[in-house]
Length: 335
View (cartoon, one colour):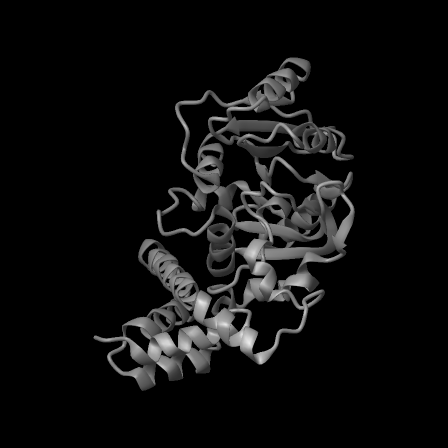
């Protein structure tokens, strides 16, 4: 069926839910009242035991042309897998991801679509393209906690084009992202080593596509006692609103979390290896060399080479304790 050329291109919102009845209606309403007028929601529930499915069914009945629910073939096992199933069933030219407990500002889709149009004009529709925004962090009653998620977490969105810094710390929060069909297709199949769908997509856009960001807080990013994802323990990396710790507290925190930091490093290594192996022939030489150097930090038989490579490429996490843990790990690897 040919699209009515008088209407804007369809944007499909991939909504992943699990026991989200508490805030779901508010989120869905904020999507369906966007000022961009050609939006369709594709929802998938991951086996909720509360009233989530009933709420989804209610919207599907009220908006049969704008709201569709995927048939559930059994729980997928997590947020990444839930979004992956949605991506596999998506059909639109442009796709956004939605969590179940946030609130979108009315111009979120239109502003990101405008930036997407500018990328397409510059690079063409056949180029994998990604647009993302900042968020405003709020509590369960939508009271502001941090005006800018980027500022609070020390995120520099410019790092989307700096692969060496992107490997250890993504700058893209999935619920702010819009991607075109080419990037979505490039993201599938998604390897098990991918840490999250949004981190994998950001890496692909960085090495094989183009990205842009809009400096606006387009999402009220709700933090509450049942967040599946959120600022969580990573709030320790925030640059604002954090109490200064004593030296003793810092040492205790480092000892307590050292193994966690090292496992995070290893997870990033596995993700980078999957990216290199899956797309080695398509990667520009510069990107391929960066990925190879990143893996060399873990695999070289020389501790001097491992640490020198880390420092020269600036393969850093955000946070002194994490980087210190990685340095200790690389110095003590037994080959």
